[in-house]
Length: 109
Length: 310
Image 1: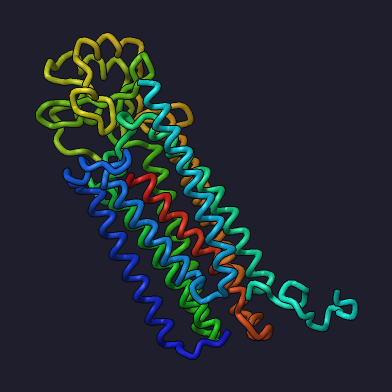
Image 2: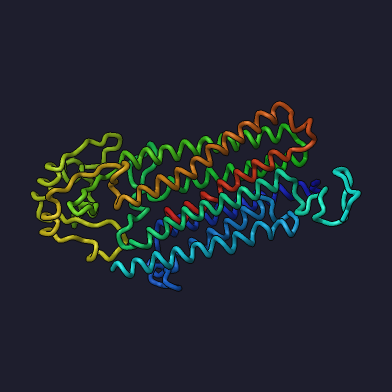
């Protein structure tokens, strides 16, 4: 697969790297400071700080898969074959286990 | 029914054989399928960790109290070492993409340069993880396991969390790094009994009053307990055994993937140097191992979030 915009590629790669660097820095800073207002605000049983971490991690995952693993430039059906099962199975597994963990915690108390 | 189609002729339909229905070669497609299965494996591990962690939310050790160390420097730097490790792995992912890009342009010397940096980055990450394990196993401040199995930290109203050294030798200032003397149960108990102000705290983010144990209760529970320093297969000084179990299991599995990735990268690197892919006419092998390497980075991003941040 020949890329006609080869220098643009390298530029894109470094841009994505800086994005990942900034997002990681934000995550680490938040993880150290743990601002109070984020810890107190709850959305569906998890506080805002944790939601922020998870959403930022998903943002990083998106950019790594799309740009570093080149999925953005692949054929459409390959994109679906890879992303759709993962997007269904992984959140479903997470949902089951986190809800059950919470339930067990409630029962144990 | 293409009865006349042979291996050499292209059949009509997308799925009739002889072409690439998903636009990727066999090797690349199989690598993607393997990565999806491995992603599900790691999801299983991480959600098992999430189940256990949220079963005990108030008493699970707090990551930025446990991981505060930095090599060659004494002092508390919560989460900074693991942030450095994340940076190293992301950096090696970038060098990998640049190697793949150079491969597309058939620029052998650039592939050698960027892939070489990726291999070095991988080795640095492995070394860093090994140091992290070493420090985790040797231990930091030390704790005490009560007779009911709960691991507790010592606490003073002036200084907050006390290390065992500070408990037994309060006259010594500064936390000496590099030597961790083994303390006996008797030393710890008599030092605790001697100072009326000291209390005992269960690890975790629970409300202070809930996680503190009163002095009288602590004294009765300490009888028959033991000192815990570092981490091993049965107990650890950070909190409940599950914490150390999951730490070793998940970072171990990830580290093993990094290790195999570095080895595979090294083999491909040697092949690039030897001109194998120049002769072949394409650098797709670099792309395939690049996919594996990015997967390893991706897993680390999730492990970092779920183990150290959440």
